[in-house]
Length: 510
Image (tube, rainbow, N blue to C red; front, side, top):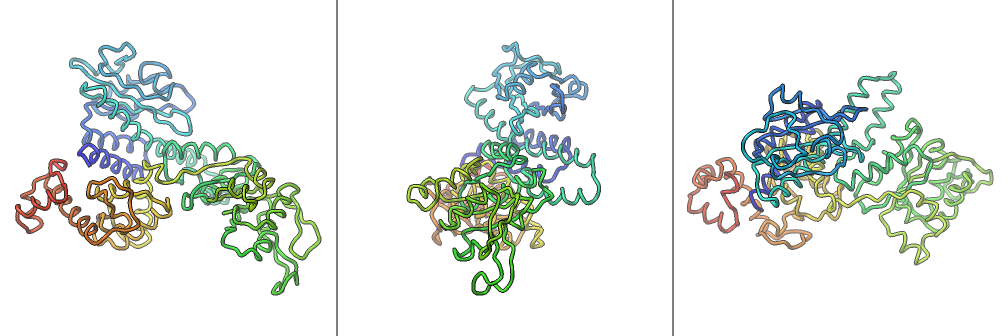
């Protein structure tokens, strides 16, 4: 992995930590610019935000500008490069600002040498809420395009954080009576802003949640196991006007076929052996609220018929009963199965499929949203630090590289389990690569590009451990192998030999 990639990972990790730490927009944006100035070497940078309810962008944080220059930096949508980026939601790179008439230089801070200008939009729920721009020494267009792509990734990380802080401020300013406040706080656990991730695929999911939440439409959430389907179901419920009503979840795959009908529809006393008393089913318990049926593709054909009836007619009878019971329940379902294949082999009813598939939401796998891995890992690190009384402050670069290279067949649930294991086994304040499970000790560490295997052999794991120890020592001494050797109580000849054997480049850490 080259030095540029390592630097970008460090920047992303630093920004993700700032997002979790800061609850003030100005403080957050200033810390982000500090990181970009230190790690990326930008000569000037600005973060603008759109004033709520207006078309005006103002500079909220800057580097390389005086206070007066910052006050002059106001733009309307479509005005100058910054306004054009905000209006079109498309990034722009200008190799030389002196040659482009769109650049207004409203702050009057650019004079003299040839300067390139890069500007990207900060987008939340398909709306531009601000821009991020930096000045660079004019370089090749390819190098500038690479910087632009990385800058857009930084903007994507910021978007949800800024929007979330704004929402929190607005909520704080309009506190309701205690009972409603407590209920809203309960619901906020499952609001989309509590679903970690800001890649384009997840932003599309958030948009869909917002579109369907306050409707009565049946939702079918699809995605691989471990992608967070129940979180989305809860976000739909608690984001609707029914957030104060019951939310009942049922895992259809976890219940035997002979019990699923009783669980869903209840039973009368004596309906079957062991039915000693009348029992309400989940539909009755969820009356007026939302019923979430997870793994709907696993229910038996006999139950599918009864489920179709209650969806269409809003009535059902308990097992062993004859009295119709009317309910008003919003049904949200989820599955990791391919229902189209189930339709083909006859194991799933076609009429039920079309009744459930009114509003489909497809959750992306973790391997298709790699930009969210660091955000998720840091979230789980904080969670398990609190659970187990640990004080792990950061994740090492090697551990980040391993997580970014892994294919995550178990998705977010697997990542959560990996971080929990690593927190339990870590003895210091850094989560190291060798603390991660064997399945992540991949051949990527030996500079190959093969797909990760289920586990690693002893040699690979030892090399992973040794590599991280040496890299940490090199980082501490800015790539000085002799100083690293002294820290590790060995000779420079041995360190140089192991550096060569493990493919480590000390210059990457200067």
